[in-house]
Length: 295
Image (tube, rainbow, N blue to C red; front, side, top):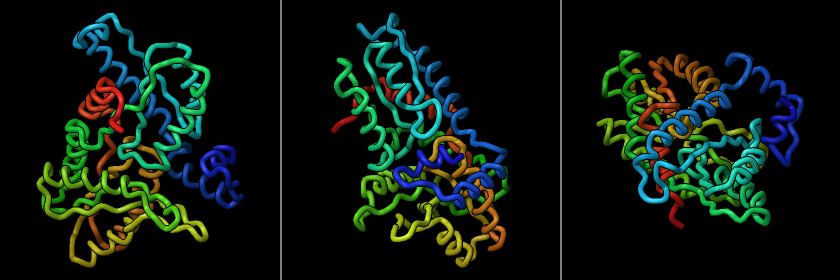
Protein backbone atom coordinates (compact mmCIF):
# COMPACT_ATOMS: atom_id res chain seq x y z
CA UNK A 1 0.00 0.00 0.00
CA UNK A 2 2.82 2.40 0.85
CA UNK A 3 4.54 1.95 -2.52
CA UNK A 4 1.23 2.25 -4.37
CA UNK A 5 0.31 5.48 -2.59
CA UNK A 6 3.81 6.76 -3.24
CA UNK A 7 3.23 6.41 -6.97
CA UNK A 8 -0.23 7.99 -6.76
CA UNK A 9 0.94 10.95 -4.65
CA UNK A 10 4.37 11.51 -6.24
CA UNK A 11 6.41 13.58 -5.70
CA UNK A 12 4.89 13.77 -2.20
CA UNK A 13 5.41 10.87 0.19
CA UNK A 14 2.38 9.31 1.92
CA UNK A 15 2.19 9.72 5.66
CA UNK A 16 1.77 6.74 7.97
CA UNK A 17 -1.78 7.93 8.67
CA UNK A 18 -2.59 8.06 4.95
CA UNK A 19 -1.34 4.48 4.53
CA UNK A 20 -3.45 3.29 7.50
CA UNK A 21 -6.55 5.04 6.19
CA UNK A 22 -6.09 3.58 2.72
CA UNK A 23 -5.66 0.07 4.10
CA UNK A 24 -8.87 0.41 6.08
CA UNK A 25 -10.82 1.66 3.08
CA UNK A 26 -9.63 -1.19 0.90
CA UNK A 27 -10.47 -3.63 3.71
CA UNK A 28 -14.03 -2.30 3.78
CA UNK A 29 -14.53 -2.88 0.04
CA UNK A 30 -13.30 -6.46 0.21
CA UNK A 31 -9.56 -6.33 0.77
CA UNK A 32 -8.41 -4.75 -2.48
CA UNK A 33 -9.41 -2.82 -5.56
CA UNK A 34 -11.16 -4.54 -8.49
CA UNK A 35 -9.90 -1.82 -10.86
CA UNK A 36 -7.22 -3.88 -12.63
CA UNK A 37 -9.52 -6.89 -13.06
CA UNK A 38 -12.28 -4.62 -14.34
CA UNK A 39 -9.89 -2.91 -16.76
CA UNK A 40 -8.70 -6.29 -18.05
CA UNK A 41 -12.32 -7.26 -18.64
CA UNK A 42 -12.88 -4.04 -20.59
CA UNK A 43 -9.73 -4.66 -22.64
CA UNK A 44 -10.90 -8.20 -23.44
CA UNK A 45 -14.35 -6.95 -24.43
CA UNK A 46 -12.81 -4.27 -26.64
CA UNK A 47 -10.55 -6.88 -28.25
CA UNK A 48 -13.54 -9.07 -29.03
CA UNK A 49 -15.53 -6.17 -30.48
CA UNK A 50 -12.67 -5.03 -32.71
CA UNK A 51 -11.90 -8.58 -33.87
CA UNK A 52 -15.50 -8.91 -34.96
CA UNK A 53 -15.25 -5.78 -37.10
CA UNK A 54 -12.16 -6.55 -39.16
CA UNK A 55 -14.22 -7.71 -42.09
CA UNK A 56 -16.02 -4.36 -42.12
CA UNK A 57 -12.83 -2.29 -42.43
CA UNK A 58 -12.07 -1.36 -46.05
CA UNK A 59 -8.80 -1.38 -47.96
CA UNK A 60 -5.49 -2.23 -46.38
CA UNK A 61 -7.12 -2.09 -42.93
CA UNK A 62 -9.36 -4.97 -43.88
CA UNK A 63 -9.94 -8.51 -42.69
CA UNK A 64 -6.22 -9.38 -42.82
CA UNK A 65 -5.33 -6.73 -40.27
CA UNK A 66 -4.48 -7.93 -36.77
CA UNK A 67 -5.61 -5.80 -33.84
CA UNK A 68 -4.13 -6.26 -30.39
CA UNK A 69 -5.08 -4.53 -27.16
CA UNK A 70 -2.49 -3.71 -24.49
CA UNK A 71 -3.44 -2.54 -21.00
CA UNK A 72 -1.24 -0.12 -19.07
CA UNK A 73 -1.90 1.44 -15.65
CA UNK A 74 -0.31 4.56 -14.17
CA UNK A 75 0.09 3.46 -10.56
CA UNK A 76 -0.14 -0.33 -10.44
CA UNK A 77 0.68 -3.39 -12.51
CA UNK A 78 0.43 -3.83 -15.43
CA UNK A 79 2.38 -0.58 -15.69
CA UNK A 80 1.91 1.78 -18.61
CA UNK A 81 5.63 1.79 -19.39
CA UNK A 82 5.74 -1.96 -19.97
CA UNK A 83 2.51 -1.96 -22.00
CA UNK A 84 3.83 0.81 -24.28
CA UNK A 85 7.12 -1.00 -24.83
CA UNK A 86 5.31 -4.25 -25.63
CA UNK A 87 2.98 -2.50 -28.06
CA UNK A 88 5.84 -0.63 -29.75
CA UNK A 89 7.93 -3.79 -30.08
CA UNK A 90 4.92 -5.60 -31.53
CA UNK A 91 4.84 -2.90 -34.21
CA UNK A 92 2.13 -1.55 -36.46
CA UNK A 93 0.25 1.65 -35.71
CA UNK A 94 -0.38 2.64 -32.11
CA UNK A 95 -3.64 4.13 -30.89
CA UNK A 96 -3.90 5.21 -27.27
CA UNK A 97 -7.31 5.29 -25.58
CA UNK A 98 -7.40 6.61 -22.01
CA UNK A 99 -10.18 5.06 -19.94
CA UNK A 100 -11.24 8.39 -18.50
CA UNK A 101 -14.62 9.50 -19.74
CA UNK A 102 -13.71 13.21 -19.74
CA UNK A 103 -10.13 14.14 -20.48
CA UNK A 104 -8.32 16.48 -18.12
CA UNK A 105 -4.92 18.07 -18.13
CA UNK A 106 -3.94 16.22 -14.97
CA UNK A 107 -5.18 12.76 -15.98
CA UNK A 108 -4.92 12.36 -19.74
CA UNK A 109 -2.11 14.88 -19.81
CA UNK A 110 -0.02 12.63 -17.58
CA UNK A 111 -0.54 9.72 -19.97
CA UNK A 112 0.51 11.84 -22.92
CA UNK A 113 3.68 12.93 -21.17
CA UNK A 114 4.66 9.38 -20.26
CA UNK A 115 3.95 8.04 -23.74
CA UNK A 116 5.92 10.87 -25.33
CA UNK A 117 8.89 10.19 -23.04
CA UNK A 118 8.82 6.47 -23.80
CA UNK A 119 8.44 6.75 -27.57
CA UNK A 120 10.22 10.05 -28.14
CA UNK A 121 13.43 8.83 -29.67
CA UNK A 122 13.44 5.07 -30.00
CA UNK A 123 10.51 4.14 -32.21
CA UNK A 124 9.53 5.15 -35.73
CA UNK A 125 5.83 4.33 -35.50
CA UNK A 126 2.60 6.10 -36.33
CA UNK A 127 1.04 6.90 -32.98
CA UNK A 128 -1.85 9.00 -31.73
CA UNK A 129 -4.41 9.34 -28.99
CA UNK A 130 -7.92 8.51 -30.17
CA UNK A 131 -10.80 10.95 -30.27
CA UNK A 132 -12.78 11.64 -27.12
CA UNK A 133 -16.01 9.73 -26.62
CA UNK A 134 -17.82 11.66 -23.89
CA UNK A 135 -20.71 12.47 -26.26
CA UNK A 136 -20.72 9.17 -28.18
CA UNK A 137 -24.22 7.71 -28.51
CA UNK A 138 -23.18 4.29 -27.19
CA UNK A 139 -21.53 5.74 -24.11
CA UNK A 140 -24.59 7.89 -23.34
CA UNK A 141 -26.91 4.93 -23.83
CA UNK A 142 -24.85 2.80 -21.47
CA UNK A 143 -24.89 5.45 -18.72
CA UNK A 144 -28.63 6.04 -19.19
CA UNK A 145 -29.29 2.30 -18.95
CA UNK A 146 -27.36 2.09 -15.66
CA UNK A 147 -29.30 5.05 -14.24
CA UNK A 148 -32.68 3.68 -15.22
CA UNK A 149 -31.82 0.23 -13.85
CA UNK A 150 -30.71 1.67 -10.49
CA UNK A 151 -33.82 3.83 -10.20
CA UNK A 152 -36.15 0.95 -11.03
CA UNK A 153 -34.40 -1.48 -8.66
CA UNK A 154 -34.70 1.04 -5.80
CA UNK A 155 -38.37 1.63 -6.59
CA UNK A 156 -37.86 5.38 -6.98
CA UNK A 157 -40.17 7.43 -9.23
CA UNK A 158 -38.97 8.84 -12.54
CA UNK A 159 -39.14 12.32 -11.04
CA UNK A 160 -36.26 11.45 -8.66
CA UNK A 161 -33.31 13.84 -9.10
CA UNK A 162 -30.14 12.43 -10.67
CA UNK A 163 -26.79 13.50 -9.26
CA UNK A 164 -23.98 12.93 -11.74
CA UNK A 165 -20.55 12.83 -10.09
CA UNK A 166 -16.99 13.11 -11.35
CA UNK A 167 -13.62 13.16 -9.63
CA UNK A 168 -12.74 16.61 -8.37
CA UNK A 169 -9.47 18.15 -9.55
CA UNK A 170 -7.18 20.51 -7.65
CA UNK A 171 -7.13 24.08 -8.91
CA UNK A 172 -3.92 25.22 -10.57
CA UNK A 173 -2.90 28.77 -9.74
CA UNK A 174 -6.46 29.31 -8.59
CA UNK A 175 -7.90 28.16 -11.92
CA UNK A 176 -9.92 25.05 -12.67
CA UNK A 177 -9.71 22.83 -15.75
CA UNK A 178 -12.41 24.48 -17.88
CA UNK A 179 -12.20 21.86 -20.63
CA UNK A 180 -12.86 19.09 -18.10
CA UNK A 181 -15.88 20.89 -16.66
CA UNK A 182 -17.26 21.81 -20.09
CA UNK A 183 -17.09 18.19 -21.28
CA UNK A 184 -18.84 16.97 -18.15
CA UNK A 185 -21.58 19.59 -18.49
CA UNK A 186 -22.06 18.65 -22.13
CA UNK A 187 -22.49 14.97 -21.24
CA UNK A 188 -24.86 15.74 -18.37
CA UNK A 189 -27.08 17.88 -20.62
CA UNK A 190 -27.30 15.10 -23.21
CA UNK A 191 -28.06 12.48 -20.54
CA UNK A 192 -30.76 14.63 -18.94
CA UNK A 193 -32.45 14.86 -22.33
CA UNK A 194 -32.10 11.15 -22.99
CA UNK A 195 -33.41 10.23 -19.52
CA UNK A 196 -36.13 12.90 -19.72
CA UNK A 197 -35.31 14.20 -16.25
CA UNK A 198 -35.79 17.82 -15.26
CA UNK A 199 -34.01 17.61 -11.92
CA UNK A 200 -30.32 16.82 -12.24
CA UNK A 201 -27.03 18.15 -10.96
CA UNK A 202 -23.33 17.76 -11.63
CA UNK A 203 -21.08 17.56 -8.56
CA UNK A 204 -17.55 16.48 -7.72
CA UNK A 205 -16.31 13.82 -5.36
CA UNK A 206 -13.19 12.21 -3.87
CA UNK A 207 -11.18 15.38 -3.27
CA UNK A 208 -8.18 14.69 -1.03
CA UNK A 209 -7.88 17.62 1.39
CA UNK A 210 -4.39 19.11 1.48
CA UNK A 211 -3.20 22.32 3.14
CA UNK A 212 -3.32 25.23 0.73
CA UNK A 213 -5.01 23.26 -2.06
CA UNK A 214 -8.47 24.15 -3.40
CA UNK A 215 -10.59 21.71 -5.37
CA UNK A 216 -13.19 21.93 -8.12
CA UNK A 217 -16.77 22.03 -6.84
CA UNK A 218 -19.55 21.90 -5.95
CA UNK A 219 -18.88 18.87 -3.79
CA UNK A 220 -21.34 15.98 -3.96
CA UNK A 221 -22.01 16.06 -0.21
CA UNK A 222 -23.11 19.70 -0.38
CA UNK A 223 -25.43 19.03 -3.30
CA UNK A 224 -26.91 16.04 -1.48
CA UNK A 225 -27.72 18.31 1.48
CA UNK A 226 -29.31 20.87 -0.87
CA UNK A 227 -31.54 18.20 -2.41
CA UNK A 228 -32.52 16.88 1.03
CA UNK A 229 -33.34 20.39 2.28
CA UNK A 230 -35.45 20.95 -0.86
CA UNK A 231 -37.66 18.07 0.22
CA UNK A 232 -36.59 15.35 -2.21
CA UNK A 233 -37.23 11.93 -0.74
CA UNK A 234 -34.72 10.09 -2.93
CA UNK A 235 -31.75 10.52 -5.22
CA UNK A 236 -30.03 8.52 -7.94
CA UNK A 237 -26.26 8.92 -7.94
CA UNK A 238 -24.50 8.23 -11.24
CA UNK A 239 -20.67 8.22 -11.15
CA UNK A 240 -20.28 9.74 -14.59
CA UNK A 241 -16.54 10.32 -14.33
CA UNK A 242 -15.66 6.64 -13.74
CA UNK A 243 -16.02 3.79 -16.22
CA UNK A 244 -15.49 0.85 -13.83
CA UNK A 245 -15.92 0.10 -10.15
CA UNK A 246 -13.05 0.91 -7.80
CA UNK A 247 -12.35 2.67 -4.49
CA UNK A 248 -13.98 5.97 -5.47
CA UNK A 249 -17.29 4.24 -6.21
CA UNK A 250 -17.27 1.31 -3.79
CA UNK A 251 -16.10 3.30 -0.76
CA UNK A 252 -16.66 7.00 -1.42
CA UNK A 253 -20.17 6.49 -2.79
CA UNK A 254 -21.43 3.14 -1.54
CA UNK A 255 -20.21 3.58 2.03
CA UNK A 256 -19.59 7.24 2.91
CA UNK A 257 -22.08 8.94 0.60
CA UNK A 258 -24.78 6.35 1.24
CA UNK A 259 -24.36 6.80 4.99
CA UNK A 260 -24.74 10.57 4.64
CA UNK A 261 -27.92 10.09 2.59
CA UNK A 262 -29.26 7.83 5.33
CA UNK A 263 -28.50 10.49 7.96
CA UNK A 264 -30.40 13.06 5.88
CA UNK A 265 -33.34 10.71 5.39
CA UNK A 266 -32.91 10.56 1.62
CA UNK A 267 -33.53 7.38 -0.35
CA UNK A 268 -30.36 6.34 -2.16
CA UNK A 269 -29.81 4.50 -5.44
CA UNK A 270 -26.41 4.23 -7.07
CA UNK A 271 -26.10 3.61 -10.79
CA UNK A 272 -23.35 1.20 -11.75
CA UNK A 273 -20.45 2.31 -13.90
CA UNK A 274 -20.58 1.45 -17.60
CA UNK A 275 -18.01 -1.32 -17.20
CA UNK A 276 -18.33 -3.80 -20.07
CA UNK A 277 -21.77 -2.61 -21.16
CA UNK A 278 -21.93 -3.61 -24.85
CA UNK A 279 -22.95 -0.13 -25.99
CA UNK A 280 -20.01 1.46 -24.17
CA UNK A 281 -17.51 -1.05 -25.54
CA UNK A 282 -18.89 -0.46 -29.05
CA UNK A 283 -18.48 3.31 -28.59
CA UNK A 284 -14.89 2.81 -27.45
CA UNK A 285 -14.21 0.59 -30.47
CA UNK A 286 -15.68 3.29 -32.72
CA UNK A 287 -13.27 5.82 -31.23
CA UNK A 288 -10.27 3.52 -31.74
CA UNK A 289 -11.15 2.88 -35.39
CA UNK A 290 -11.88 6.56 -36.02
CA UNK A 291 -8.25 7.30 -35.34
CA UNK A 292 -6.47 10.38 -33.99
CA UNK A 293 -8.31 13.09 -32.15
CA UNK A 294 -8.65 16.54 -33.64
CA UNK A 295 -6.22 19.13 -32.33
